[in-house]
Amino acid sequence: MQITAEPREDFTILHLRGEFDTFYCGLLQEEIEGLEKAGVSRIALNLRLVKFINSTALGAIIKASRNLSGKGGKLVISRPSNFCRDIMEKVGLGRVVTIFDTDEAAGTALLEGVVKTSAPEGNDELDDDTTILFSPSDPERIEHFVQASKSKAPTNPVHGHAFGSKWRGVGRMSALDADGLRFTWNGGNTGLTSFEMGQLLSLGTDLNVKFRLPLLQKGHCEAVVTISEVEERPDGVKLAATFSEIEPETRTAVQQYAADMAFLKKELRQATGD
Image (tube, rainbow, N blue to C red; front, side, top):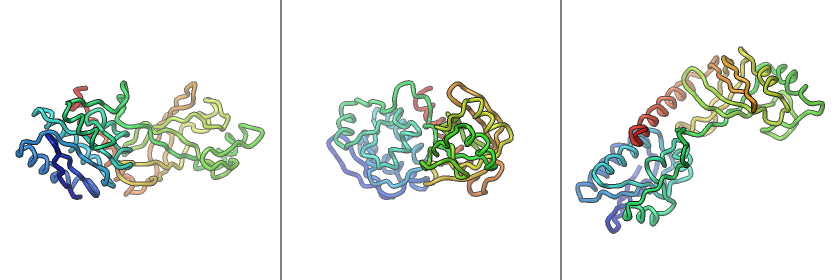
């Protein structure tokens, strides 16, 4: 990653370019400390050309913002790339470090001392629910529960064609760690009642799942999980599942993801006083 300083009147824009990962956290700290020694305590980080950012880098930004605020300064973010913006919204970074669409808006906020949070009020979640695709490992369960739920074969919510052996449910993942995951499912357009969803995804049922790890890689991770908890709700079911088959590389990535989330939650709590 490269960092270029653009001095403005009473503040400086640091233009970051490349991939901002753990290796470059020290570089950002050195740049900010150098500006502080030169009497600059109002800084905007321009992330327009940052193609990748990980949780440690986000933590470094939080720490830099907290340190500058403690000395009467301010730090904001301007023009984040689509990748950066997506990650920052998921982890709720806007609660601590304000994000602006232009350098001009960032500069105005720095000079006026107005920093408005970009996260909605009352949103205490660190990240948004993550889409999870799932299907029973035993295709007969699909035929028995899903196909039989309507006299006319319903439509696959993922691909749009009629249900069959390639059917996939679309759930919302609420928790993920090295042992397993939790998710909710409203049944999509299968026509299943909550009770029938609970039967389809009963205790001990094996599922093939695909899920994303936004901070670590693009695309989906794949694994086989076994349902360990089922809770019927008026609008669907809430489930917990443990990993029964998962590649070592994927498990390592999940462990890192869980550690990253715990780290960011701690940093956000310290920064917000929650």
